Length: 199
Length: 162
Image (cartoon, each protein chain N blue to C red):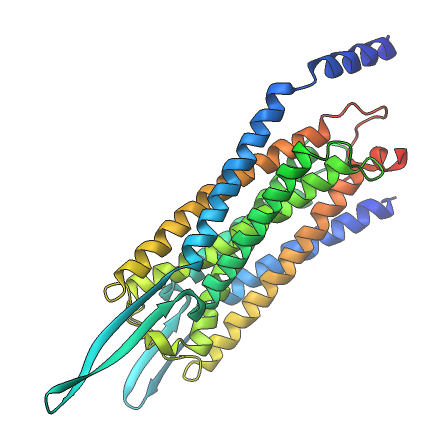
């Protein structure tokens, strides 16, 4: 009786063969790729130059040029690297989905995809959160440590950074959904054995 | 008699619970008062939203770790624990990353933004915050090991097929 049920279950799963689900996952990966790539590019090209007049010698004013670049802050460097790695991961996954359907390693393809997706989610969340708190520090300053806010002087830098942050958080949410879907794909495979979980 | 697999998992979860608790306590009790050239200063963890987020996130994970310690083996809730482990790892990573970003600025300053490093004046505070971050890091690694271990146990039939 139980064997018949399992056979019916397996036939049911193979006939479902989720075609719409495959396109949904691909679309989500494409969106996540665009989001993280946008975050990388916008923050990577984030630069603002200001010239101030420091002193006047005779009639010629002496100008000092100050730049705000993303490389000055390690948090933003980590943000750019994390989002870059995430977009590369998404690109490789899209290529693998489209071109390399037969690529497999001892039947562990789905497990590897799920684990790599989880790692990317962790990476993006770390990068986005570090950059978010650093941006909050730059915007509001910290009166206790006597750090002044820099956003009133470098408005474009702050605006671009905020845009990159929003794109990264959107990519994080998309990546989380993708990771959940990959895990579901991994666990929903019909297994011949029992499914008790050993704690 | 307790099986060795269950004992190992219990030990790892206890370590994770202990380290998150240590991180919360170290960060929450870190404050320092003093005077520096007739200027009195006080440093608390509530000065920065990043440290507050760190305390809150680690407190949530501590409560979760405490509750999971009492889950009986073989209960179906372990699948939910697998999913929640991933969510809480994300929370831990985000909180540690944020706290480390602010702590790095506090230690090294940022000369281009005219932000001076403050760790020279409040060494005790800085050391305690560093300790809390180290504890949080160990907790994170323990949770990652636990997640991989749970996935491996869950996928054991799949591995044996290969």
